[in-house]
Length: 92
Image (cartoon, rainbow, N blue to C red):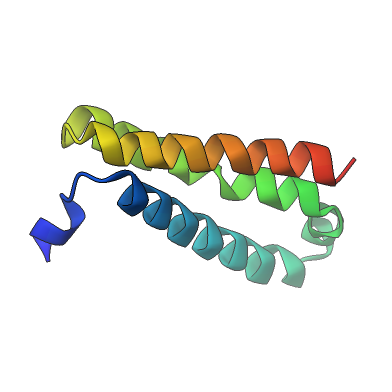
């Protein structure tokens, strides 16, 4: 299992980025949707999209610095950058 996470490929980085962003988006939707103060944050989909890409920055740093897997880090970086641009341009 450890060898699987240390794979150095751009597609693996994109997959990890999508997986982590989707899990974060779902978790925040469940948690913030139950509170009255959080419902305002959930009402605007751009807010949740931008928050869901934040853990990718930590994962990207782990792959660049900690594991020294540059291709996987580049995959996470590309997905995060494209996702943030998507959030800004689609939800004006």
